[in-house]
Length: 111
Image 1 (cartoon, rainbow, N blue to C red):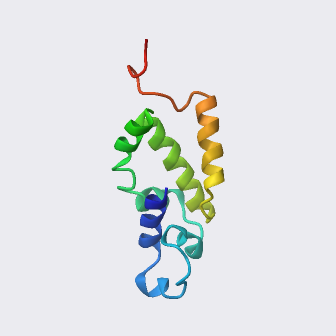
Image 2 (cartoon, rainbow, N blue to C red):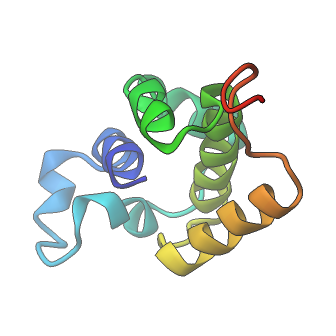
């Protein structure tokens, strides 16, 4: 999440503008820019999930499901101009696991 939002913030806020907010973490810069349209959010997140398959493997979850979940969450933050809150992410992931929208990849853990 931090990497994706830092990438987005860096693409939204120019170096010159960043100097106006020296105490704002890069992954929260999008809150200084304000909300963006869905299409722009998708565009500025390109490449954000390139390393996610390795993370999904470490967590033994389906990488496509994890990418979909995290991308949707990040787009929601960007389109609303909301700050990242790890508690919201934990809640989202827990709900996805309970609803079986986030589970082990096909063939993994099957008995």
